[in-house]
Amino acid sequence: MVALNARHLSTVLRVGVLAVALAAVAGCGQSRTVRVEGQVLWDDGRPAGDLDDYMVESFVPGSLSSSRGSIGPDGRFVMSTFGRDDGVEPGTHKVCITALARGDFEPPPKVKLPSRYANPDTSGLSFTAERGKVNVVTLTVSRK
Image (cartoon, rainbow, N blue to C red; front, side, top):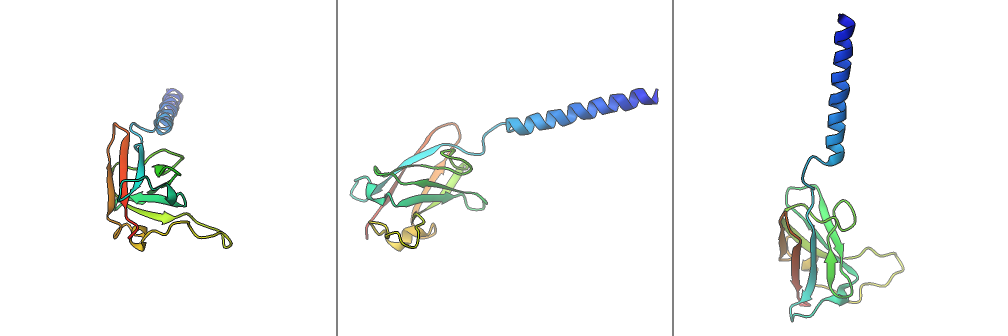
């Protein structure tokens, strides 16, 4: 009788471990990120495609994760957090725009943004990302 109880306990433990493993693989529900795509515009309304040496960076205050997206030649970007184009954490994001990392012998960016845009506390840029939709963001910057 004791062997039967031990066998039963072993089966219950195996099923429990399998259930936990499947839940972890399945992600236990909602994704941690939501899709965000956008465009950087100059304050005159033109796409800031000349900022293709820059990237948009964002984070939700209090979070340990940040997101980033390279600005393309049309001023457009798609945000990534954990993997390519996977989006951002839901919530209200502080945003900065910084030059892409360069090697020692690479020329500086073609266009210089005012330094306030490199700091999320002084950039004046933000967006809110919500679940259940593709979040489309427009960020407007000035050359001054």
